[in-house]
Each structure stands twice: as C-alpha cells, then as structure tokens.
Length: 351
Image (cartoon, rainbow, N blue to C red; front, side):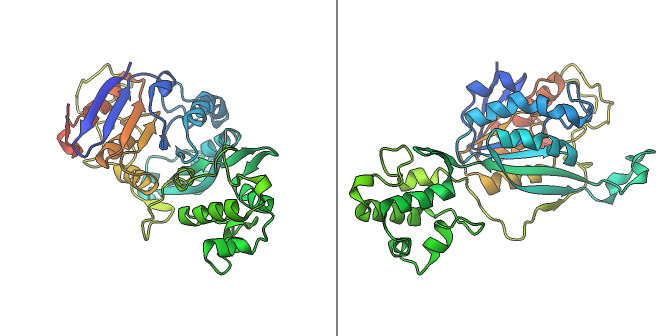
C-alpha cells in the first residue's frame, strides 16, 4: 500500500510506499530518471550486506525491475562507495545499462575526523563518495540481429544503395553526416532530431524502392522525429559544473536530527540530537541530478527513500516522485518532509 499522493505548489506529485520497493515497482509510472541510494555493503542498516561481495545479489531484483520498467531514455544515478559501485557495475551492464561517468562527492578534510582506526590510518584518508551515471544501452532488434544504434544508422543508409556522401546533401551540411552521424568510431554523434528527420526523408525518397521502408525501428514505418527524440534522455547543461562536487557532510539546518520527535517506532533508536539518517545527501546534489537530466513533469524513482531527498528535489522542481522506504522511522520522517510539516523544508505542499 502506498501513502497517498501529495500535490506540490510547483505541480510535482509524490508517492511514498511504506515498504520494500519490490512491492511497488509494478504500480509506479515508468521512470524517466532513477536515483539509487541503497545498500553500500558496509552493514549500515538492517539488510545491508556487511561486505561489498554481497551487493550484486542484493541489487539483482531491483536492477531487473528497473530494466523492465525503464524506457530508452531513462537514466540511472547510482550512489555508493567506490568498491560498492565497482562490485555492482557488472550487474548493471548485463541488464542493459551503459556507463556514462562518475560524479565524485568531495566531503572535505573535515570528514576525516572520527573516521580513523588502525586500518584506515595506514592509507590515504577517504573523503569521497560517488554517484555513477548510467543510461540505457541503445540496441535495436533488426532482421540481422540486435544492433547498436550507431551501426544501425550506417547499415540502413547502406541498404538504400546511395553513396555515403549523399547523406551530407540530405542533411544540408558539408561533411557532418558522414563524419559524425554515420561514422563507426568514437567520434560518433547521436543525430539531432532535425538531422535525423532529413536522413529518414531522403533515404525513403531516393533509396532503392525495393528496400523501403528505411530507418523503421518497428520494421513497418520510418521513425518520426518525435519517436527519435524519445530515444535520448534530456540534458540541460549547466556551465561550470564538473563531475567533482564539493560539499561537507550535512551538519547544519538541513541535517535531520531526532530531537526527541517520536514520529514512529525507532528501529534505529537515534539519540535526541543524533542524526536521523547516517548518510543524508545534500538536497542541492539531488536538484542538480534532476534538473540536468529530466524535464518538468517527468517521473523520478527513488527506490531506497531514506529521508527521500531525491523526491523532495523532484516535487520542488515540478517532477513527479515515486519512493519506497520500509523502515517505519525513516518512512514517517520522509512523509513529514514531503508534506511540508517541518518548517525548514521550504517545500510548500497541500493535501
């Protein structure tokens, strides 16, 4: 059972399932973006394997569900330790996720305090955490078998019987079509919607009539510009933003503390002023992820909600969030956060 849906002033919706995400995946809208902040293999919460070796099996059911429900333009942002991510990476690749890059959270030298023991003192201090960015691997089913998108583009043009050079004429460019869109090396570019429309139209107008249709993903009709656009995830570039994000661990007004609030049975039983969650993420980080790789109205999944920081950022920016959190204490805190019951949230919601 989900804890209702709440409407934000900005237009975003949030749905919180008070149980394991596996119970809810089938009821959620298909994801445009997934933020995963689950097990790290450090025994940080009940069920978290104590070593990274158990992470692949821990994530297997989740990754299978993500892959089944995702569409070609879905992106995944996978928070973990370096070794935790490395251990899980092969599973993600097998399930059709393509690695893009790693975001490095630099927590600063202040993070060293209190994190030293007889083992860690004999290595360089760790002040980082990572978020690995993935997209769906674009592979199409063709009569010749499964084919990567870049190879399919060139193969379809070859099928027309037209010289490669005419692709430049089709696109109205000097050499960009052959050098970028139809190339097979690392310089390959995903053709912009307008250019793909020109390629498709030219191929079907001038190519060998016996081979038509050309560039038909379904084998029946040439791909439309709208269909082509849906194969690629949004990207709203922010100038000056790199893959290294510096922010100290939360320890100010944004950090949730127990403060004696008995909002639910305290499974983790934090002290009165202890942090409510051991690894709360900065809200600004979740805003960055959601703003850069999704559009307003898109669907954001947060399968391991915790305090639901990604969901808060989603509804704040006009997206729709689906989250799950089985721990009663965290689930209750997340519900209060998503319904704006804490004055510091700056998230005006109405029931």
